[in-house]
Length: 374
Image 1 (cartoon, rainbow, N blue to C red):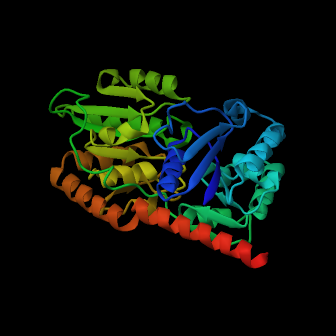
Image 2 (tube, rainbow, N blue to C red; image 1 turned 45 degrees about the vertical axis):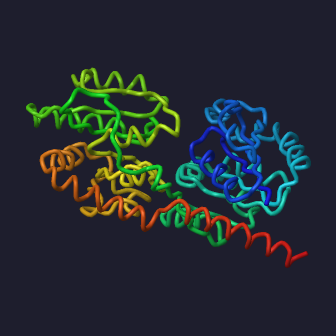
Image 3 (tube, one colour; image 1 turned 90 degrees about the horizontal axis):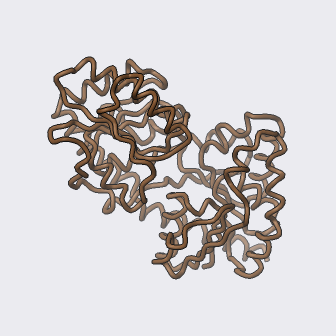
């Protein structure tokens, strides 16, 4: 089977899908708006990477409601790739940008995966954004969501059914192990493996950690923030304003293959997003046996079971986040129990190998329907 993935070729999610499909015997072409490092997929000869020749950051930062029209410039390149690769299926990931390209290129079967902000935020910008999303969804012959909550949100803009296929994880890759030595011995490490963007609530985490440090002055605490993003300088200034700079480490972006080591460096993982379509970081930490504090928003309650695998707190609530952290810091037995139960939960509900088989079965259904129509 030949699959053209129309997606950000540098995204860990895209990398994971491409590698897994190749391992299932598929030949994969990843076509992204911007270029990817040459070595990103080099260990997988069944995967080819192509760029559509656009600067994705410029497109994302465009302010006008007509900015999506800039994608028209790369349509000829996409159509040329389709002619040369001759895919069996075109699968666009992210319903607003790549979804628009998939909808406009005219290829079928075209399937579409929604990711999060493309359905939670994008259609609320204007009537035009809503119309673009409706158009993209209408053109797809199959729609996929990673969570039930995001499927319900997407259903506001389409009458088509959505198949929920979780973006699970490899529980052998994400498993309990020794972490990295990033803080002095005896430090209890709290942190997050997330992009440093406003909707992920890193400011809430920093303020809650500062409050916790004041509440427990005798406890050695460290805050680990793994990831890069537009808020990095602002968040670093916030740690200085809160007087906790010496306790905090910003790693910047880390290679995907090194991510489990950072999860295992945590004693408590925190995912206090303001919006979160699914919560991959939460289940990665749970799979490593780490208890999770998460905001009770969107898809996160689906992946974090309150008082079973972690603690849920109201969104944007610094005091509640601090209280949850303090409960876990002062109760090692609770941390251990939630961590152990979290790994069992992920192994049962979010095993990546099962999710890949679900997608392969969905692809087969799409091809069978195409053959029945011909």
